[in-house]
Length: 109
Length: 114
Image (cartoon, rainbow over all chains, first blue to last red):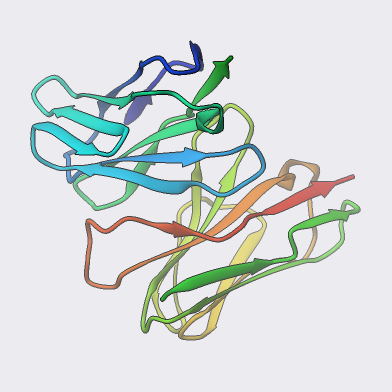
């Protein structure tokens, strides 16, 4: 079966750095997405990785290792507004998105 | 710019009643359209997707149905709701022909079946 694993919940301090991991086992691979979802709202797109390596976009970076079936989302200079759930999703060989359950990130002052 | 809008935002329905959620996309043509359901503590579950008018693919057998009467309109329906239909429903679109493109989500509709 296909599976996406990410921690259920993480806590970090305002101004710090946090890394949210995602491991996947899927039938093929055609890209990995990270989305941010605030409570009660729709997910919004953060990043897309299809090749190995690090993609940086402002305070957020996303890393991919296809050989390890592994990705992480790195958030720097954490702000209170970063408190949200972060969803990892992988597009399989049929171009269907397989979603993780999300990681709830709690930012403390 | 492209926008997506779905409604209603919240609704409370009795078991056995019908359901209709509507989604429209503006600013693009022939989008791929999707209906997802999100349950607490679980990943997004794809319910239906459509690559064109009248073309609907169902991912999960259930008492829900979807229709695409117009290019940028996607409707999720049920004739008789079950308690298990409660959840957060999300409509999304992606660029047609761009298989690796990201999804853009509507605001979501929270359904409570009592």
